[in-house]
Image (cartoon, rainbow, N blue to C red):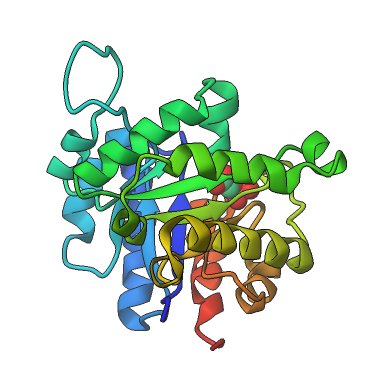
Length: 255
Ligand code: PGA
């Protein structure tokens, strides 16, 4: 019942020309041979408007990498969810570990962003994940449960249907070391149980739980086969069509 989703997070990379040519190459490939997975691209904020024009007639959806929780106001440098919706975004990444750790976003801030995204009809992609030290101390489940509990506490029961959750262990992001299938299945299972306990079984069943952290063509087939993985959030490998296309296609031969 959950169709696979692949998200390309381009982070702070790419001029307009670069972003546009990458998106063009991906769109062309998918037009030739559609993929089973739905594709979402999250370019830098500067490219959102142009990319929206470019992918308008394709199956690709647009995501922002972050948003504020107010619709407007005196928040220099911020972009509101209302503005993102206005320029054609369908999704927004919320609580990425780089936002949490480099920009000190708290669980409480992330909770406000989720509510604001949903209010503006954007689908939030909520990222959760533990540090290496937390995993080594046996705290992975505890940390992720806390992140989910606080981030989702203001959502109404049915709102959860509009959320995607991405498990991204911080020690796997940009390091070349992805988590093992067993570790992923265990955490994704925990996430799903948490969602069922908090929002009811039938709502929880609809939420896609993605994996992210050093996803690349070499591991994407195994990840796609991993039980409880409904999709992938891809950083580095999404920056080149040669590496991103095989990752997008990894769901085509499964299930
Ligand atoms: P990575 O990044 O694929 O480069 O590890 C993933 C992410 O940060 O979402």
